Structures are given as C-alpha cells and as structure tokens.
Image 1 (cartoon, rainbow, N blue to C red):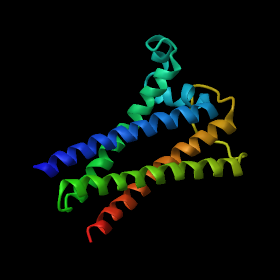
Image 2: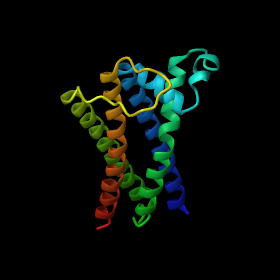
Image 3: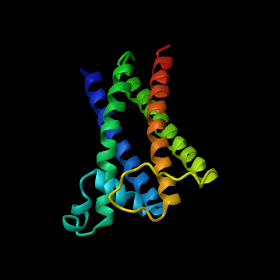
Length: 174
C-alpha cells in the first residue's frame, strides 16, 4: 500500500515538473517568435479568438494555459511509466528517489534536444517552413522556424528521455 501511495506521489510530481517545464519553455520561446503562438499555437489550442476576448489579451495567461495543456499529459505518462517500472524496488523510499532521478533524466534530455533544435535552426537559417496552410501570413519566418524546431526537437527529446529514463530504472534494479 505504501508503494502505491508513492506511485501516486511520483505521478503528481512528474505532472508538476512537466507543467513547469512546458510553461518555462513557452515563455522562453515566445520571446524568439511571438508569431509562433499568435498564429499557430493559440490557434491550435482554440484560444486564438479567446486570447483577446476571454483572456483580455493577457499574453501571460495564454502562455500558461498553453504550457499547461501541452505538457501535463506527458508528465502523467512519464510518471506512470517510470513509477510502474520502479515498483520493482524494495520499498517506497527507493521507488521515490530512483524514479525522481529518472524523471530528471527525462527533463534533462528534453532540454538538451530543445537546444539541439535551436542549434540546427541557427546553423541553417535559410530553411524556412513553408508547408503550413495558415489562414495568416507568417512575417518573421526564420524566428518562427527556430521555435518550431525547438518544439519539435523537445518532443523527440521527451520520447528519447523517457526511453533512457526507463532503461535507467531497469539498470537500478540490480
């Protein structure tokens, strides 16, 4: 029973850390390309019209909204997978400590991949995303492309991080 409560705690902590990552990530990347949010992300989340009406044009609240809803589910998935794999540990304390370390590995790899995406966009600034069917014109395409690369690579990093974090959990069994 104690390990089950620890598993629930791990899932909650994982969701919180993922949401903190997502909100921070969106605040940082919105400085590079506000258009990525106003012309794509807010549109995708169905808050483009609401951004000005319901949020009173509150940029901060809109970014928090998007950061939360784009990452909570990955925190749930990460906490659930790493927590379940960690149930093999002998007690709740080991389960918590070793699983939290694996969660930090996932976050670290996700951040690293985001930087890789930024670096690739910096090294190849002429590569512009043109295959979107936006109802809007993108004015600052290079910056938009940078943030797009950072976001895409961050998702890849989350997947790779989850795999490595899971392998770390399995390695720690012995």
